[in-house]
Image 1: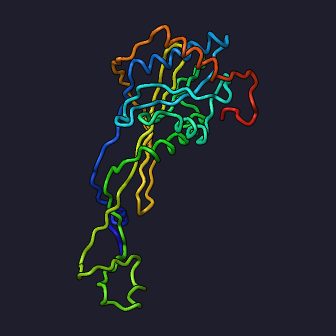
Image 2 (image 1 turned 180 degrees about the vertical axis):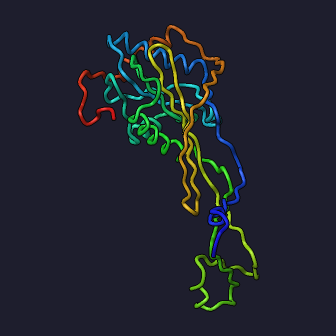
Image 3 (image 1 turned 90 degrees about the horizontal axis):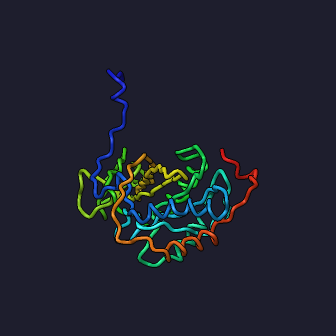
Length: 265
């Protein structure tokens, strides 16, 4: 058989119905953004040098798209050039949060480094956070057709055992069916990633994960995103600043050597 063009060999795209959309930009309150830069400043003041640190972006459970606070876990070690986190660390911090708060991403500092985007180490961290966040905040995003190339429809009580040998998938119904379309739910979610620097710069991306519940269809995508700063009722008092200073003092663990096993790729 000859085809006039290669388009005749292409498999058709599955039919899909969109149920929900994911955020295309990142919304953060002024309080939360200011907190990130205040942490950078406190690290320099307290430890007399600029070290990378990491934290989690936090949202209200009923509105997970908006960052309202920055959570600072105990950093195991802080060095000049990178930060690393594990799923165990994320889970431990998440379990200690009030029930009305959730983690919707992560944030870290590049300190005084000139790199104003994510590194290879950062991307590995992001995948770790993405898996954790989407497993807890996943939502049904779409109904997607599962394309079966050789579907055989059978009627209950009217087929022989040998009939089950036919086809790649068998659909057994209580009434005769000539045609069927199988739709699976595609679950997914988003995760924010922000990096900040000592000179008050920031860069951010959104990661998306989608997975079909039947087919195993799975995608991970990411894109640069705009940062929308929202007004906040929370303001910084002298008491708040003192508490943050004590938290940074307690949770940042500066080291001046560079472990070979964690060298930046």
